[in-house]
Length: 183
Image: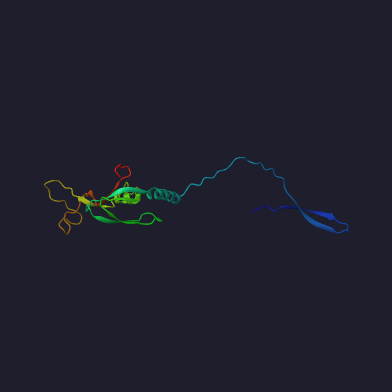
């Protein structure tokens, strides 16, 4: 709250002998020194702003077109309708692709076909999107199958996996032709 200004009343005589009282402002003299120092305030960006910047960099990098050959490992010579939607604001990719044909696709589609996602830091970028697992079983040779938590075998008579995924079988892939001299 500001301090009220000091007011000093003065009297002015006029020819008609009327006295008029007018307020006059009296300002206190204060010496102000101009400082030549500049104060720069840097705001630390929030986590949300940092995430938006990272997403913008990923979109710029992964939406560029790459040339490559589509491989159908599951049914050689066959075709596949590839539908991928990854980033907001980017139209979804939808195309029928034939085995051993050359295509220009966005980088994120090529990575999806190869089972890689660079934004998946928790699993080192390996998402196995176009592959299926083969589970492994582990018990000493010559002994009976070990007991599992549920039962010894599932409904089909197959032992329940003990150690998890032993191998990933690729269904589809995309081989880059960016550095291939024959293309």
